[in-house]
Structures are given as structure tokens and as C-alpha cells.
Image (cartoon, rainbow, N blue to C red; front, side):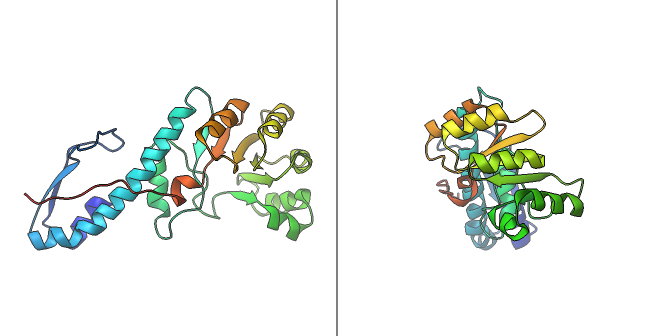
Length: 225
């Protein structure tokens, strides 16, 4: 994205990266050098840095959290809660940080949520309709309690999302599920300690909306020589 910004402003600009994508760097590290007309460089500066600061922040936080649960088999997922216009960029940043993408949009998997269940009348009916519409698409059901979890199990989706489950209920769900159905924990994870405990409970995935919606941009600057 940084390269593209500079090239769109001025095709004559030359950029030389001094680090590789995904490298861990210390504060004060020079990331790249760029050569071109001063006016062109200053025109592109803010937009290029906006991309770099925001996406680096997402990748950095993703890396930090993946390291916390590296002793488990859990995979950290992003969500569709992204900055408007930057979804693909942010999801790329999550991958760069060691995380995984959940869904890109509404086209690549079903996620049956509360409103879908209400509109269909039941979890079973919502699953039936989704299977009929796209039999080969991944199908996930979001549940809010153990009663809904049991109903979802009976409907045999591919994944079940445990929304705001307590640690005890999460552990119960893990014990009652089978290997064919993947479990995803989401919501209610406020601290690093919460994250580790949920990962240790044995779920397959943990989705974290904050990776892309609560970005605290890294402080970067571009200085002229």
C-alpha cells in the first residue's frame, strides 16, 4: 500500500525497503528510503504513513496476541469489524502478524446469527435453508448459551461460535462437541489473561474484533535528508 501511494503520486519515485514484510523491528529502526521530487514526496507522505502506521499496528497487536497462545493449537481470527474501505488491507495485516482471516464478506461463508435464527424460526431451520442455498459453503452458527449450543450441535454445522460464553460454559461446550465441528470463542475477552484461559479451554479458534476496529496507530515519521 505504501509503494502504491507513492507510485500513484509520481511514477518516478523510487522506494527501497530496508526490512521485510512481517519483520520485528525496534523503535528507531529505519524502514525504507525513498527518492523523488520533494513536492511529490510531501504530497504522498501523509497517506503513505497512514497506511503504514495503521496496518503495522494491526500486525503488531496480532503478533503479540498470537505469542500469548502459542503454547496451544488455537488460531486467532479477525472479524468483519474493519475500518470502512480498508478491510482487505487490515485482513492482510492480520495475516502478516500471524493471525488468520475469518470471513472477507458475506459471500465466502455463512454465519448464522441471532437475527437469522429469529427470521427463520429456529436454528435447525436456519441451517437447513443455508445448506440448501449453498451446500458446499462453510456454515457457522452463533450461540449465546448452552441450550442454543445443544440445538446447534443437533443441526450439524461446520463451526459453532460461542458468543460471550463464560470460561466454565466454554469448557462444557468443548467437552460436549465432536471433532467434526469446530468451536470458535468470541466476545467477553477483555484481558490477556482471559485470552489465555479461553485458549487453554480447548477451542479451535478465537475471533477478536479489536484487532481491526481498535487500532492505535504506531508512531512513524518520514524525514527529508
